[in-house]
Image (cartoon, rainbow, N blue to C red; front, side, top):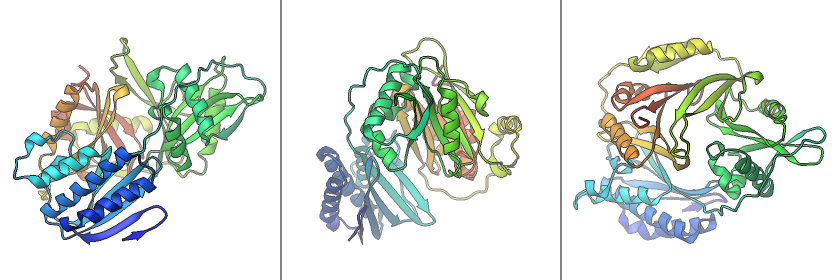
Length: 435
């Protein structure tokens, strides 16, 4: 076992005889890295179940790391195994699917259900399973904030302290409808840790009297793109938005990003060089009238073109969008090549109950991919999620080849994000769940 300031690493045989060591390391690491007692015990139990799973699955050895992030503690198992059934890691899996003799899958199911999140990775023959537990933060009552008059000139600076972020979150929550408030605004302490760790940036505008008059927030979507929230204008005459957007664009000058996208934009941004690339319809029980979120995009660097994979189901949509955006792309149609894949696929899901939103993304290819996707749509719809989306990266052939599955499960292409991932990202919306 080795330790450093930010991680614990263990390499050991995949044998249940080492469960005590793994439990002790998980417990001590979680405490040092800031998890509360209940989350610590869940991580300890998850660590035990993962080692049991690898033991029954036939792995020879495992490399285990326990490390903190800004807002969580991650435990990752890395191992070599050519064939494995990961079906228990899908959120639609349940204990009823596994018999008394299938204890390996049951261990994996228990481990993933205890965690706040999980992810599977593969590089050649090396595989990994990462579980994480989110740190617990208070959600304080927000300050009551009114719009104020701007006195004197504006100054712009990054907001990094918890008190300043608390003030910013209170203003956003007081002056904007709930569906326009980023989810992390509910916990300024979590937000402060994200800012400190570089996961999130917040730019504030203050007037001559040091009053907070507006903010804009952003984070990296990928190495090539940035997603932003706002601008949120707290002035009584809405005079701050324009200058705040320009200050934001100046702040991105050395970011290296090619493209910037809006996630939550309260006002039109065409006057600042942005292009409206979609109006995405949403269904919310709290709002009776039709609602849509505007998605704005701006190129920060010249786009020299790229090659992407495409399926006939959405090829015409892509051609149309590339023409409108004046982007050069070489569209290569995916073909059935007869390669072998495992029997079980894994689909990751990011849930946002406030927006009745579920974002599905492909984590691991498998022979049941289409059926697995339809099971996810059915389960999420039955759970009350009205806005179900699916995201693929067009640089990855098996992602692009999902076009037929997506059509069968009720998805239609909705939004293209140039350079949104490894290459361009295509987002589909499930039309059946919104009907």
